[in-house]
Length: 126
Image (cartoon, rainbow, N blue to C red; front, side):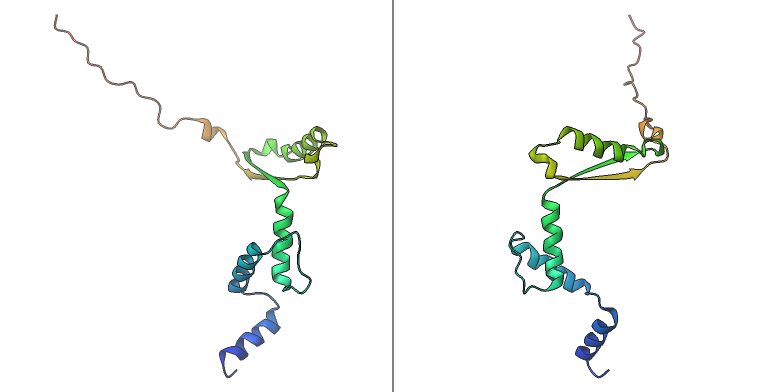
């Protein structure tokens, strides 16, 4: 390897992956291009970003925290969505249900610093 260009060429051949700067550049370019009319002669990385952006436009993200006993809520939420919005324009909207597992939510519900009453000294002088 004699210079930086040769290193980058070899790296690209070996890894076959885009660098972080290339991803950033592709994301920046994808924001300026209309994702409904994707040109055919576009870089594949930019095309991938545009397709991902187009897919996310018609989606709703629901994120909640749950205990292990509520793990079936994700499936139930999708079923409820499908039953409620069947044959409506919202039926084409993709719903993404994200969860964060909390082993015991009761720790969150317990108040760590209980409310303290303000100190009112008793006036004994009459």
